[in-house]
Image (cartoon, rainbow, N blue to C red):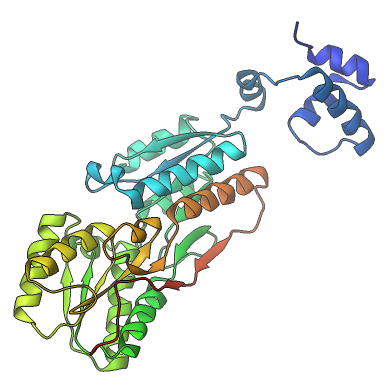
Length: 338
């Protein structure tokens, strides 16, 4: 028969309140008493009743990820799925449950979510420069963390890739290899129109790079569908046959671009180099493997979950800004221009 809290308190010679504080890892317990209680818990194999803990604390011990997908099919894409599994891993490591929300919230629906005690905190993705979700969450004192960042991030916690620096890094690499006509295949037009951070910052990085290196503005906005990317890339290469390198910002864009190059009889990297921005392990899966700026979605999601749980455990904790510097890994898709 499982040992009870009362039996633990009696054996340890402490109050049931003290036992409860030890189990919930709360303060105001001397180290000597804490160790006495923990020794009995370990010896008896006591496992707390999770539902009872939730009811007693008024907390769900769960966090949620809001990832409003423009295309529900993207959830099976390795880049998107890595973020989801990373958040789930970070939650599980801290004994938190995890939920995923992919619908596009309205303010009314988000407010209902906050007040419905469905999760203790929220991680939000697809951050716009003026993201209304963060304004509403902050106004209602609801704990949240962003994967991505706004234009103004004072008092907010986020983790994000330094996209402007990442774009500059890939242009610098290609220019160092002698490339002067470089095509830039970036996020969909509606992402830029909606003010989504990655699209805006990628465009800023592009403009900075072509100005710095005095390059022609060879730029295409691509829907995240291989067939659409294929047509756009083929059109770019037919209009600009002297292009010797392509920059891609998403693995779906890489797939469509590679198909276009193959159909035009242009080998990578002999006839055209290709380099990616914000790629994880999937950069190893193309043929040839893709030179790319590293962006480990699983690890980023895990860090975001840890950041949120730290905030939940210490409400007055200073907000965290983690801007990840670009790290380029060279593989087989780039070569010096002959």
